[in-house]
Length: 385
Image (cartoon, rainbow, N blue to C red; front, side, top):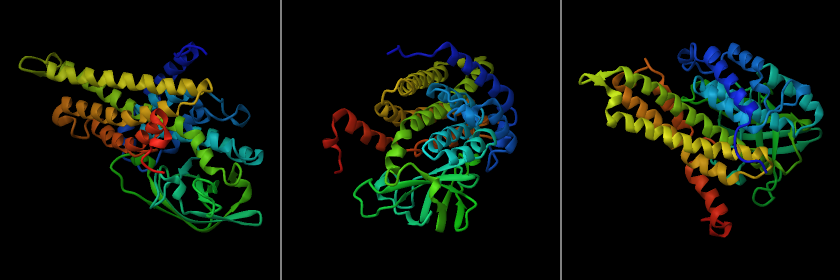
């Protein structure tokens, strides 16, 4: 196997993504962060540059890029606009989910997600069920050429803006453990769906919601994969999803530190730039060191996936530390900026609020450690049966 590193094409892709972000996303990013959805013009720009089709086949308007390139796009855009970055991540998820569906469904939805900016939400969590996916209660019952869905999903990122959602249900409640779980694509305009928004600390443009379903009739063709295989389909995408989240929160921290460094070089106290005070400069370089180490672990995981190697261990390790590193970096930047960092004059306070959301997204640090115990020590040493 080749040695871990970035190819020339990936480095060129990063340069392109960075230029696009500077040109198209940084302007007015602070104003967009106050919205409760991603504006259509931003989605159009992401589609035009190809970022919404990174995991979509060419025949449906995409380009099927490698996982490292997907991570690069998520990282670079998150420095300016977390909502845009999340749109890229969820579009990549849409490509993976739709690839498990029939050609008819792929032809219907892949171009809509890759070229027209339609958003697919991901719905596993329920009011009483988070990381214990086997305990979900949402039911899907076969009725001829349809399934009838009942139940409630919660904490759905993009829940209010999504055009379609991938929803995990129980089709066989008698099946033990994770067996009997089936996933469906559910258009959000179907009768019987009610969405309720959350008022969140951050992630405002990805407005989370609950999604209640009352006798929602979904065509059987919208089933994702085979019946009873939903849990395993979710696990097939969870590693790259977690790794991408890590790059996003680390990008929030890195951009904040970069802005704090510029400020520290200009801001003077006691007749010298405050960057000359080690109490200031040490915390900035400490954050950059932690960010770089976490990024290397994260990109190694994506590189492994690109080479067909399982990266569950790397994804869990990266996700267990990256949110705290990103939060600490944003906080260190805010402290360096002083009172102006606490105001909306700078974007650091927004990034700090956004960074906290990564503590919960796709599994807390505690859940990642459960995964690591199973992987490093052995599943017989887990705290649960």
